[in-house]
Length: 165
Image (tube, one colour):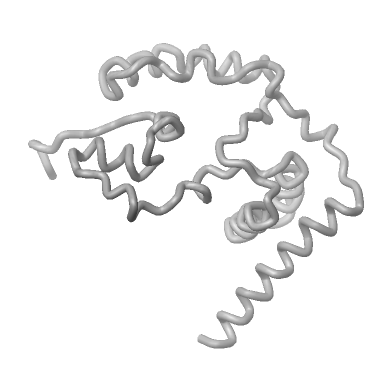
């Protein structure tokens, strides 16, 4: 459909160190000027919920996977200050992560060399100590109340929007 098009590809991780965040990286790639004073903050992009919230998502998704529930959980986590942008943790056991990394190593090398034209950022992305065994995650009453109260507020806001529509 667009034989003369140029494909611009960069790994998302470069936005972490870009002075203007994700939008700045995108504008740089497109060759556009960056209006720093008008850019939105990246504070709601790639938020990492707490291990308890991730475990709750997995448990709820066993019954009925639903994207909006996960979105509400992440929004509540952000609003309550529990989530962190770019928080580093892994829910795959280190041996599984190593096998997956090994399997995709050649493809990742080609991606960085031929498309992204930068160093392979995935070579040492995960460390074994980043692993969180979600089966070991425990909940105390205060954290459960905190998580569910945020979800209830979100559900209440959704109902209000539906009632007013």
